[in-house]
Image 1 (cartoon, one colour):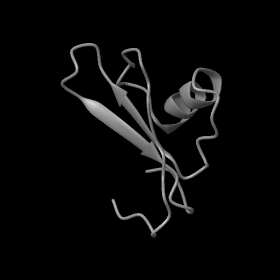
Image 2: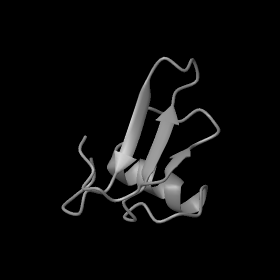
Image 3: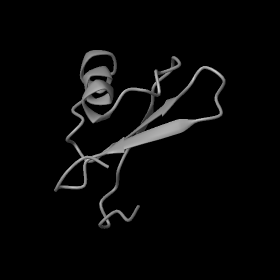
Image 4: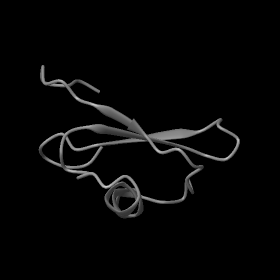
Length: 65
């Protein structure tokens, strides 16, 4: 992932997340649980219960990655 020189903050979701969730489900966690805007350009990190899988949600200006 290449960021365009902008400083992005990284937020880690403290509880295990359901890795079956897609963009909409993870965006809902960001809005409801972290009280942040998923379209802010910041990075949001989610891990599963065993901490061997991770997903990072990022808005790049054209869509969620």
